[in-house]
Length: 269
Ligand SMILES: [Zn+2]
Ligand SMILES: [Zn+2]
Image 1 (cartoon, helix red, strand yellow):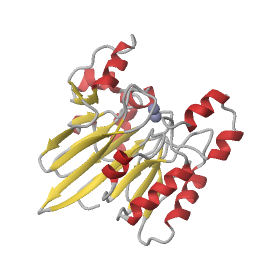
Image 2 (cartoon, helix red, strand yellow):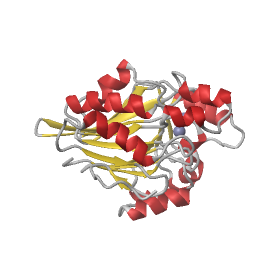
Image 3 (cartoon, helix red, strand yellow):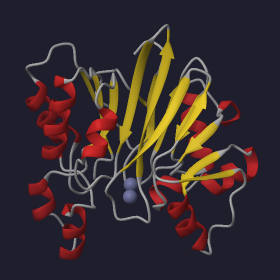
């Protein structure tokens, strides 16, 4: 990517946070680790919470919002969230009202100069759930970055929103065989496998191929399950599906280290 720089700072059930920088703005998607951890992740990529102009929340599950309240209180960063997610979050007695909260329907957009952030609905078992794209437009050319995790299955909305992205952070949550054989109770296995659960490596691989056919060059596999996946297994599943395409960079997001979108260095997990 030329004008958009993106890193997954944290990824997985222990917390999610994605950092995106364009010539106009620096923003975060989710703040699912402590405020201190978010600041550390940002420092590792030469940024800081004091640079962040907005936080966009995908949904209200704790692995996506854990640091939000402290960050909101300390830093007064405008936070954009779907109304139903905010209602579910604020009903939780642990969470007091967030400052600088902007409530939206599940399809909304926010502009920062030539940069446009757009949401799209995703199928997940929270009060509401969205993915995002970031588009940077210059001289009639648009560069697009997309983010979709916590998705039970690929929908028309997801496909039509992410198509044409240069780079995509996409969920590869579990290997179906590992999930079946693994330690999770039966009801939790069913929840993960459901249409509103999490995306398997196999479904991720199929969708990655579709995006590669339509020009996406950079992929980061994200939100890997600690119990039911392993980075090389996820990576192999996707590499197999996109092996016919040249110049594709594929990386796996780390639970606790920044991974540059557009790097092909798998992290040491
Ligand atoms: Zn979730
Ligand atoms: Zn999650």
